[in-house]
Length: 233
Length: 230
Image (cartoon, rainbow over all chains, first blue to last red; front, top):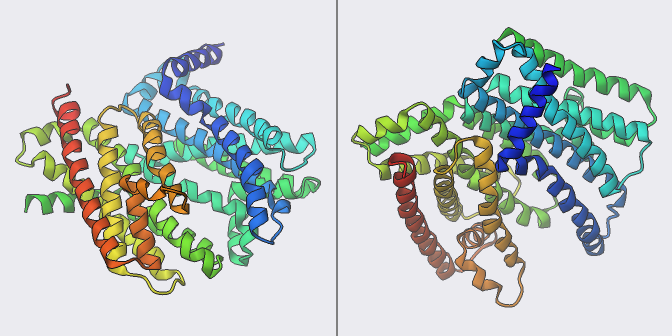
């Protein structure tokens, strides 16, 4: 009950602050921008070069899923840094909600939105055909990735500036989703340890259960390590 | 001397906050990607990468830096210190331009691109970085949170980035060169692809003038909104 009341307050706070409200709908703009790109830019490029890019269009979906999750994660991370600077998180830790409740509350918001935008992105972009279970699984991975990003920024950045530096570095993680295209063995092996790679692999091989298992292992491994770090702090 | 100390302090701050480390990582990633591009695409891709990332990093970071200094009370101390506003702002511009130049040179130097005019690359990176950092200072004056800052940079980015497409060429597209970002991109492309001397000199003079104007404007906004909090 407490969680719900707090979530309601969070939602009210976000809707009251136009900046936050805008940030929450930015992924929607991203999806629209990429849909327009698929509709108009892809045929244009296709006409320019002889190389057939259509079989690679699913990377657009993967990119949008990862970008939406990282955007929402970064927003949440900065929101929590601002809360920490304003001593709000400290205040929350002595309320019945507690330190963990506060964390769940904040991260739940970005994770739910990530699920929503991943599913929306799939249907709007319409660049790959996947079983419904896979769509749900990809949205779960996306939601987990947004939590990972939020936690990475919040737990490792002591202040806003470090947060910005982290956000910049975290964006580089997106590369791991596209290492197959680069065909560098060492980079692919390195990618195994990063969540974005598994989003691509699940989309590429939606019928291989082992990939699902490994994706869960890597994603929840990161989550477990980050939560442990947060608790120790 | 005061300015040099301020620049040195800012550089140490940036080092401590991992800017240099982040840009080593970013440079490596760009180099990996660029190494896969064929030469004809690399000749356009490389200047675009240098222009879109290292040159504009000031806009991304300066907001956080100033907000943190505001929160830590550094700006309150600044008012009663001998450091003038222009020196404070200049030190931010110079120190962030230093990171930009290092990253731009590293990305260009380690990529397999042929001949580059290093002087023009240096000038275009410094002048572009200056404009974007000064914009960041003006934007941050009205922000209280990083999220606010990020969202407020979007219209500026659109204003600066969209006209850059005029370089693809259409009737009267040269008129867009009055927009500083277009002039800066033209100069940067010139550093890689060659540019007539008169055009390079006029672009450098124009961008220096724009940097000066943005500096005066940034000082006014900074003093009004941050120091005197009008």
